[in-house]
Length: 221
Image 1: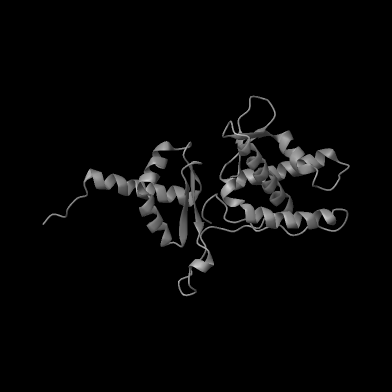
Image 2 (image 1 turned 90 degrees about the vertical axis):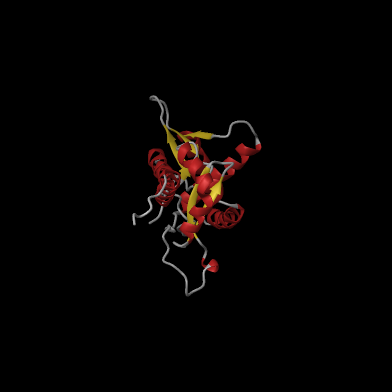
């Protein structure tokens, strides 16, 4: 007896499921980056949720904003007996990076409240001005800007800023809307308390240790 072969109609969804799982394990899936894959995700999201649940992950999907990613289920959702090793890394952030994330999140909220365009684009100089007033005074302006650019590059690596191509002009960045999913009201409230303590001791000592970043949207570790 010959073994039954999958029909094209069943083989295609299975192939899409595999491609989707691999793409999500690598990082964030954006609608504007791959509309075909995004459409497949909307069709197969129930199966994707079941598949990644076995790995201790959950699918976060925002159709309105056009992004999807995987995050580790909280320990409260898993019994001690069934807890799995964490696939999505939690990385501690330095205080300046945490500060810049909070400022960008607030800037995004202000931008949304104003209506209009859906893409928040900031120049490098605008981002520098956002954060510099919160950092200790420095007699070396160039060194301070270099430090802030290092923090900006870190946030680009984390996936919350996207560097835009410019034709010889100053660098500019799009604030990715996925930032709203990671920096929520509770995160901001906790950070505001830390910021107040930091400003109180700005003249001396080291700033408080960096916040632990939720789950980086850059993929599984």
